[in-house]
Amino acid sequence: MATLLTAMPHATVPTPSAKNEAPAQDLMRTVEIDSVPLTFDITTVPDPPTVSFADDVESLFTEWYSSTKLVVMGRGIPIHHWISFT
Image 1: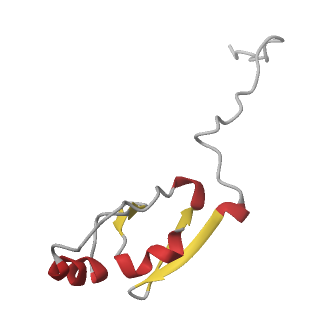
Image 2: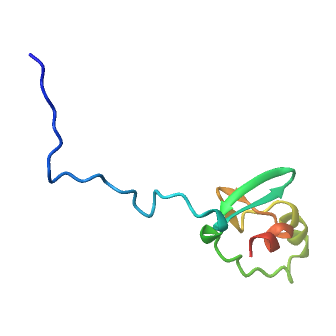
Image 3: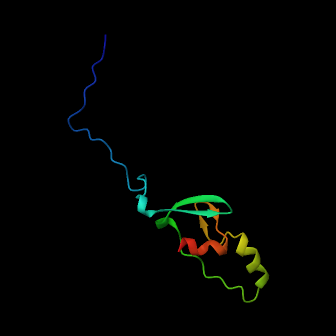
């Protein structure tokens, strides 16, 4: 015996929450870091941290090319690329 399924009059179709919606195209940016494109939603980028290298200039050279002080989409952003994220 076949079962007939009908929609209930009070059922609604769930709409995506704000968390699940794709960001608007005008909020998306792509930056190339070490020849690898990184596409991100600009609203998810934190402010770059305030950092001083006055007492440790050697660390500036290290952080300039490889840093985890600013992380976007799970990737550490070297200091010389920070301007692309502000």
